[in-house]
Image 1: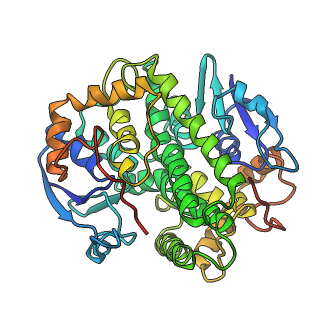
Image 2: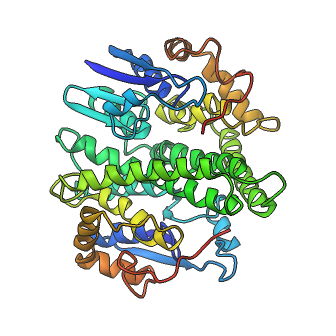
Length: 222
Length: 222
């Protein structure tokens, strides 16, 4: 039996969503952030030393890291679903967005978020504007891609969509990149919101409403 | 023919190293950072919109992102080398470190680096010390793993080692995490340094000396 260790309001919702899409059975363990500091509780460190989520357990195996868990589940239990064959013309796109989500986009968003917290108001405008320009370049890249593709790996929904959703969904509760002039990203979010497995996953993950559509106020951690 | 677009002093050295280990033929295009700003040159944007390296071209395919390029090359040209079979007990470890390198470790290092640049000296000590404590947790995780494993995926050298090397090698020219009390990471770096394909790759990438052993002064970008 697969066990998902899920921290509320975190990237572990991706793994719940993946398993719901695949209709695989799993056990859920839920952890709550400290309501004041927003830190994960210490008990999560007894599951994995970094004390972050997601963590997936499969028998003796304890695996963290969204991208790794997604690849693991698909390779061992996916039966070819939600991925793209190595020989497919869409394979490079699939791999790109699967890695890009956390390695580049989330890194850029996190840099902007942390730099904004670290700088005194009005100071370091050169650094902050360079970071803003870089984030804009990322948003342009994503928007441009979705002007030519229904989903990240082409015409079919795949795990690349699952991993790319968080930066535009729940992450915006921490740092909102803003999508006012991004109709293609918004249309893609709307397509995702219609998926019954997505809706169910977000309920299981503890969201009272669709995190991509409205989150209310922005939270902050640290 | 594969073409590697390589920016000096950047993550694209991983792709040169991968292809050297696999002994695959490739064409190399080298770009130089601006000697003052350390920014990548604008011509790199004509290859890929983000203007960063690595970028791999394979006929019509233009692929960025270290982890994606590594998976692509191994899946299409690797013939089972430098990776781990899905059925192997080492498969979860292989996947974990392959994704962890950029999604978690590089993100943490970058956060500490950017926050240090953004904060006025002496200010924001709470944020900076929280970031330092988090980076320590990462270094403990890596050091602890290498106390039990010769290479990241077990007894054999794999692409997980290639992707994990940059944060402890060339990256230290931008932000040095420090390894004074990390004998296992240092021993692993020394094992890597003995590899003829690594030595050749670093020369091709433009390093005059092994970047893991000594880089001289720390550079800075932005």
